[in-house]
Length: 193
Image: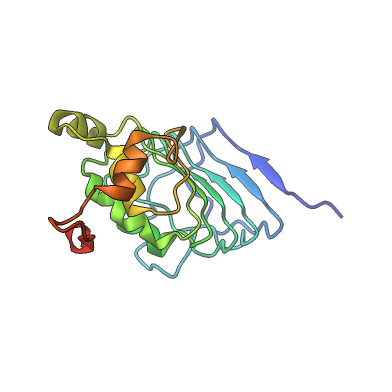
């Protein structure tokens, strides 16, 4: 009996994986395909990756996704690659991805506001985040702050942001000591709602 553990179907014209039963699959690479948001993906309990519950690595980079795909059935998922899509919000991430995610790549999407990082607080193990190439980066430069500091503030478990160490950086220190503090030095959690 054969057991498929890794599948790289990159560079094809795959539009959906709904209904595939691959219960032992650990790594699924579907980058550079034609994946789009499922029309019937409005049910937050209906995972597009049902039947792939053992998945640890999911790469759906370089597709046509406008929202985080529903991989909530993959309770051991660790690494999620969503770069080069058309994501503009991370609001649904906490409902569509399990809390086990440690690595999240959202580079080169359409995320405009650093406030979106607040939706990543749900992930208690998130250690590495990549977000370069989103409009929020240019906006942060324009207003004179480092978006990585906001990400580090919102996700206290981050160890790396866009490949740079949080602990060894000045922006990481600012996130821990000065960012979102009131006049008496107390934390203003309500600023990020």
